Image (cartoon, rainbow, N blue to C red):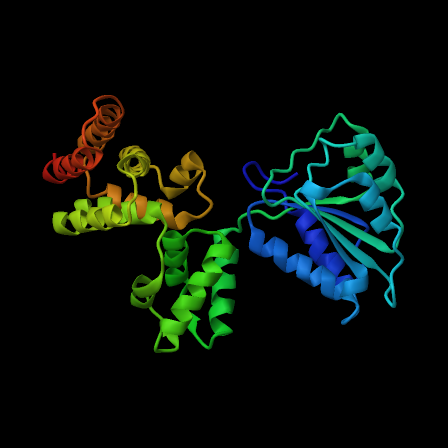
Length: 345
């Protein structure tokens, strides 16, 4: 069993090993948030199983909305042409809501030449351990979750992607990129492409990242509270103005700010009780230390009383937005001004 809080990567590691050794099985279920990895390994399976030029005869896809057991059965029965295997990919079909008995019988006797992959992208994979179907999947197949990657793995991957573009990036700047744009590889790959095309020197700098990367909302709101902690109200107001210009709804901005202030409050409490960033990571379910360390740095510039009052005022502003009919932008701007003025309280 994986340690508490850690995703189980056994099936993922087994898939990598099977690809390397050429021992891919007959049944897989792919699910999870990291679409980039899922699509990458589907591509690797295709290259491993199907001779070049023969994909049209040996690669079959079925859309979940048009799925029926008869079509799948007929596709399974299609013998490979000039190839040892066929690859069948079924997209977004909920295995446990259809003809479970019919599927159980089919999956139990899959021919050796078939590699059948059920891909969950737009729908969530939920197994039902009480069914015979779940037992067959456990016995005959492999359920592979493509989870968000750990910070260390992502940093290494980012470095490799930049090297492929003849650029280098330091570990701290790679962590900053993850903090700014999120930890999904599908998002990061496009940001890396933009930054690599923009950077004029081999070494990618933080200035290069800030110049062209599109930050996630949480990171922008953090920049706003960080500016308040530094006493730079003009910058905080400028960031808020940019968010308004992007037409982000005030209630949505307030929700993100509220989470940020609660995190800041818990970080300040951690400092008061001599606890470190590891405590903050566990408390908020953070996958990497970088955002926790940033929060701890910011919290050191605020008093405990300010953090407590900020959380309360954020809740009061949320109630006012939802119940008084007052202008949301005015309420949020007023809150920001109040927080900035009372920063040292």
